[in-house]
Length: 355
Image (cartoon, rainbow, N blue to C red; front, side, top):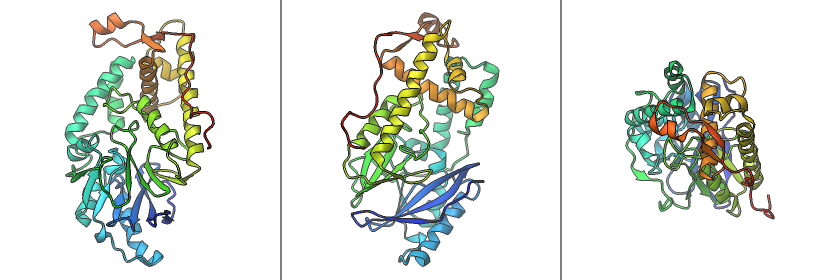
C-alpha cells in the first residue's frame, strides 16, 4: 500500500490557494487531486480512481481543510471538477464526487467521450489493443490475458455527463487551460499564475507512459514532445504539481531531463533495429529494450516501444521491412529496419535556454 502524504497548501502569485490531496488510485500507486480556492468557484482537479479507499480518502482530506487551514470550505461547496485527462486513476471517482457535490464537469473535447461513454470507448480501445498486439508480434494465445491486465473493462467506471469543454477557449476565472496532448489526446495542464497543475504531463521521477497514435488521434510521442516544448517556452512557472509523485521545482530543468531521456530511449530503439540480424517486430524490440518485464509491465513496455517506433517511422528513420506482407494479411506482424543511417535525432530543448 502506498504511503500517503498529508494535505499540502500552495499559494500562487495570483492568490489562488491550491491544496494537494493524496489518495490510493491503483494497487501500489498513489495519486494526487487538487482543490483550488480563490480562483472563481471552489474547483477540484481530477477525481481519483474510485477504487478501494480512493474516494473516501479524497473526501476526508477535503473535510479537513476547513479546520487545518481556516478556510470557509466544505466539500459541498465544490462547483466544478476539472479533469486533466481521462485515465481511470484520474476519472474513476468522478460519478460519486459529482453525486456528493453536484459539481459541473469539465473535460477536454478529445477526452470527453471516455468520461461520458466509458463502456463504448472501452470496447473501441480493446479492439485497437488487440490489433496492436497482433501487429506487434505477440502470440495470439496471450492476447486475451494482456487485454485483461490493462483493465479497460466494461462497467469499471460509471459514465458521467460532461457539462463543458475544457478547451483553451474556456473562461475559468484566472485559470489558463493548456492543451498538452501525448499522454492522452485531450490531456490539459492548468496554469494558476506561477503554479502549473500538470496531470501526468510532467512528473518528478517518472517518464510518463506514451501511447501510439494508432490508438487515438493526438496521442503519440510526437505530440508529447511538442507539448513538453510548449511548457518549456512559458515564462514564470515556478512549480509543477503532478497527478503523482512530489511537486516539480525547476520545471524547465525537469523538461530538459525528460527530453534527454526520451532521446536516449529513441536512439536505443534505433540501435536495436540497426544491430538486429533480421528486421525485428515490436515484441522483439521491447524484449531487448526492457528485459525481464512481465504481466502488466510487459504490456506497458510494449506500448511504450510502439510509440517510439511509430514516431521513428513518421520522421523517416524506420520503415516496415515486410510492408507488402502486412498489407496483404492483417494478422501479419510488422517488422522494422532502418530507413536512413546518415542522420541523427535531436529532441532536446533549444540550446541557450535557461533551465
